Amino acid sequence: MRHTCAALLIEQHAHVKEIADRLGHSSPVVTMKTYAHILPSLDEKLADGLESAYQKAVGESASFLLPLSEFDSRNGGDVDATR
Image (cartoon, rainbow, N blue to C red):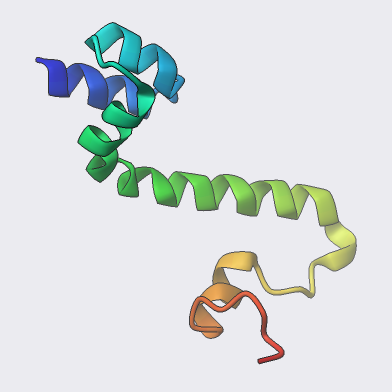
């Protein structure tokens, strides 16, 4: 039940300090070390959120630009394309 509780709270973007307190961990570091394997599933949500914010910021005027996700995959994950 503790693992399920932690997973659900992480999915709901609860603050790690609140999760640690609820689970009785001595610090948020203990929580992150214990449940870090859940976080990779959140990576895609984070990337989608960044992409959405980027597209909203640049608007229609930059529609010719590659989406960040496409740039990243073409660039082998290297953000600095000049290298």
